[in-house]
Image (cartoon, rainbow, N blue to C red; front, side, top):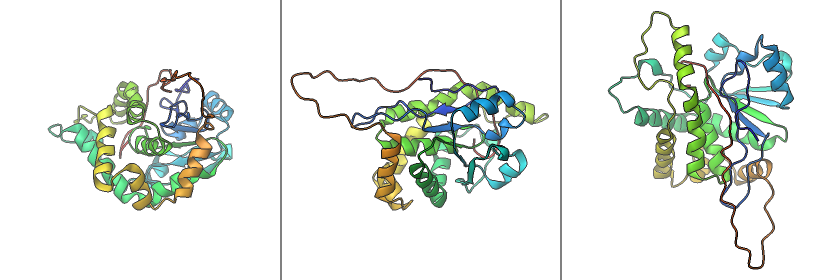
Length: 276
């Protein structure tokens, strides 16, 4: 299976399937996708056709309402269920971040703000993902920060290892140069002050997950305690997104499948402003 779904205008559209969990199960392919802004489907007939072939029924847009108003949303004529769950409550301009700051610590701190402030929206997103049987997609502007945070929460709740969660997050690094080029094209006359703009190294999400563990004890405890997500929702999430558990093996066969579901493909990405 291919992790990166290729489009002409969408450059960071990825399948979250294929990752192995601690109990030996696998995240199903073709059930949950993460993406950059689906507003780019407007006027892109080939991309619209490719998108519809995926069978997506629900779109969760994590951007601010003012971003949606200014830059558009997934085309309404596609007939999809659409939810605008703005998880970030403290906007900031990544192009203007002080270059003297530790960039990864800075981003992890912004993620911590989202985890604190966006509890209602994150809870709603997890409940929606857990409830539907048909494929779904969630996105922000570039599919990097807000999208990366929600993807990490989902994967950890499913039992995916931190190494695979971090590797999934860092796949957006393939998009960095296009993100920077798109910012310059959209902001003529401005100088990109922050040299780390568009980056998504593993360290950012590892710091964020470590901060959650330090504050709440674990990601699961954060989801249950701060977000207020019921155990039944997490169980439904696992039932919907994971392959069935394999029967217990007997005998002397001790071979172990150690492959992870990292997948293959190429991607570049677009989108700017607020977090990405």
